[in-house]
Structures are given as C-alpha cells and as structure tokens.
Image 1 (cartoon, rainbow, N blue to C red):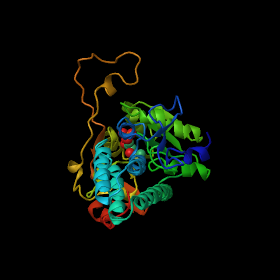
Image 2: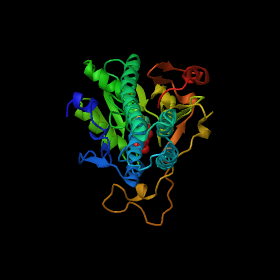
Image 3: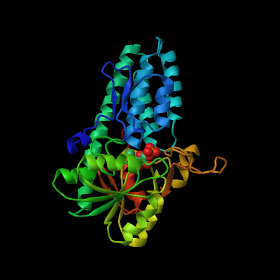
Amino acid sequence: MSLENVTHIDNVRLSDGGDAVVIIDQSLLPNETKYLTLSGREELFEAIHTLRVRGAPAIGVFAAYAACVLAGQTRETSYEAFYRRFSADKAYLDSSRPTAVNLRKALDYMDDIVRANAGRPVPKILEAMKSGALKLHQENMEMSQAISENGMELIKDGDGILTHCNAGPLGTFHYGTGLGTLFLARERGMTLHAYCDETRPLLQGARLTTYELQSAGIDCTLICDNMASIVMKEGKINAVFVGCDRVAANGDTANKIGTSGVAILARHYGIPFYVFCPSSTIDFSCETGDDIKIELRDPSEIKEKFFIKPMALPEVKCYNPAFDVTDHALITAIVTEKGICRESYTESLAMFKQPAHP
Ligand code: MRU
C-alpha cells in the first residue's frame, strides 16, 4: 500500500444499492484484509461491539449508515410507525458501545433528520437520511484534513512522536486525527519517527497503527505499552499524539485505556501531550471526565484473545476497562478542525458550544 492508498482507505461506506454498510474488518488486520457487507440488525450491532469497525469517528459514520440501512428495511408506511421502529433501532445501535460520543451524536443527527421530515412519505424520509449520512461522512473527511493541517505547527522535521491506540485512517477518515499530521508531514517530504504503543489488550497500536504508518512509508517502531517511559527518558520522543473518544467541557479526555498513564509520563519528562479530535467529540453534557461512561469489556480479551494458549488461569479475576480519562491539566493542547485549544479548556472549548454535526 502507498501513502495515497492509506489516506484514502475505504474503511466504511454505504453499499452501491444503499441496502448495506461495507467495512474493512479491523479485527482481522493486519493479517487479513476482508471486506464485510452488513445489513442485519444484529450483525451491525456486533460489528461495533466487537471492534470490526472501531475508532470514534468511524463508529459514528457507520452508525449513521446502519440507521439508513435498517430504516430501508421497514415495511411501515405511516410516519408514526416508521419513527417508532427507527427509535428502537437507534437505541439498539447506541447500546453497542458507551464511551465514544460520536456514536450517540451521529444517531441523534439521524433522528433530527427523520423528525425534520415528519409526515413525508417514507421513501422521501429514506432519501433525506441517506443524503444526511453521506454528508456526515464527507464532513468527517474534511475535518480530518483540517485537524491534520492544524497539527503541522506542532512538529518539526526529525521529531519522534509517541502514539497510543489507533487514530489513523482506519478508525477515522482520510488522514486521521491523532495520526493525521504524520501522514500530512510525510506527504510534504518531512521525516518523522513514530513510536507506537502496542495498546493492550486489543493491540490497536501494533495491529493497525504500525500497519498504516509502515504502509505509508513512515518510520515507525513498535513498543510494548510499558516501554513508553524508557523511550521518553532516552530522548526519542518530542511529542505525544493521541485521538480521543469524548472530551468533557473542562478538557478531561477519554481515550483508549493507558492514555492517561502516557500523559502522566509525558508530564514527568516535560514532553508535550496533544489530543486530536473533531470538535464534535466535545460533549458539553459532561462537565468533567467523571461524567464519561467507561466501557468495561470481557475478561477474555485480556486472558485469551491474541494468544494460542490462554495466558492466565481461567479463574483469575480480570478488570478490563476499554478507556480512561486524562486529566485536562496533563493535556498541552486539544487540536480540532477549527484550531488549537489550550488551558483554560472551559473557556477555549466553549466556542464549540453551537451544535456541530457528529
Ligand atoms: O476501542 P477502540 O479501538 O474503538 O478505541 C479507539 C480509540 O481509543 C481511539 O484513540 C479514538 O477513538 C480516537 S480516533 C480513532
């Protein structure tokens, strides 16, 4: 794959007939590139829940398309019955994962479209839903490009960047959010060195981030999560770049489990820690990170998932939170498509209070 192929990867789309969502199954990468065509209610839910489609922006657009596909299957002809069915599908899809706000916001956005078309014939509502979902997809691509561009002022040639989880084209769109600036820099002939945390337990850093970076010709080195401190101490890291799943009004930020630990290390070593996200990832209904729901996942992901033999006694107790919250005081800046926000986040993020699309 070339740089161009990576930044234009077809990770989520509506099928040509509009009756299914087509995704790359991210749970199989990098060993197998398999496209799935999904249209069943349970399989759409399962794709989000099992991280076949993952990454906050990608989940949001996927959910918007899934809502269109399910709405297209309805036999209801009255608006009231159609809306009841839509609401049930919306609630079901929304329950697939709790932390990334993009999922809920994308479904609310589709809800607004349906209600704005109340009383119109169902085929017209379906048309409006489809064009709304396509618009959302397009906007997400444009936002990724703008976020990546805004990140360019934070780097210089030769920098070492530490990454955690995956915030590249697979989990977002186009360039990505947390990784977007690396792809843009490469496009412009700069040389950066990425150090990628493997990101236990589901290994998004090892499986997806190094796959994307290496395919695009960006120098990258895979490290275990517990090696972040030594590479920082050895002076290899000039900045930490991460994406995020939800930002509270005060700047507290939920991202993949382990992110807050990386931020604490970065503060210890005096390294800037940057969060990249579309402004729609800010959730003003959460005052602080304490209001963000952290997803708890199945213990088998820790004990068995990527190992030929179990890696722990079957009866050992496990705690498997999928995300953690990084305190706003540890975040040097939050990079959005509209600009770079710094402390006080309560003030700098407030400019995004007007409704934006997910
Ligand atoms: O559990 P995941 O793989 O969906 O978690 C994703 C992340 O934590 C990403 O960093 C985040 O969604 C930002 S952009 C893809």
